[in-house]
Image (spheres, rainbow, N blue to C red):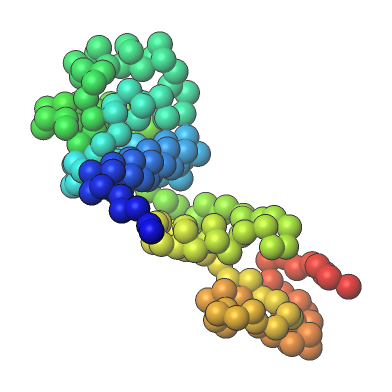
Length: 192
């Protein structure tokens, strides 16, 4: 006979899972800040829009130390200068605190207008079947502002793959023509 789990234990397990998901989401934001995938201004904007979001529940000290070249000493001096308590979360900042933090970010990390015709390029590379598609799917879902290029391949589609979404599936003659017409940034023979 199967034992039933008391409702409070189920609630605790669900709460623990949600807490882990929230910690992972905050860790992802901190990595994105450190790698300059997202600006501090953007994270602050997200926190103001939704104080319960991952950005909104991020503690200000953690936010600051995730920024490039900000260590614990600088973080503490910044918090003192901006008169922000180290226990504050981004989503819990008052209007004045948000304004001074935004002003500091604009001064320390100015956001320049992108040059016409130029963008930043990031290459997601790895061996076959390492999970590049999984990473690309996550990026597509969580960062719709990032545009992903679609590679061409001469292999047959795998189940669930869509031409033009996951890859452009072409035959070898078409691939050779793409090379001849300089349509590819790079190409390589992966198998055979």
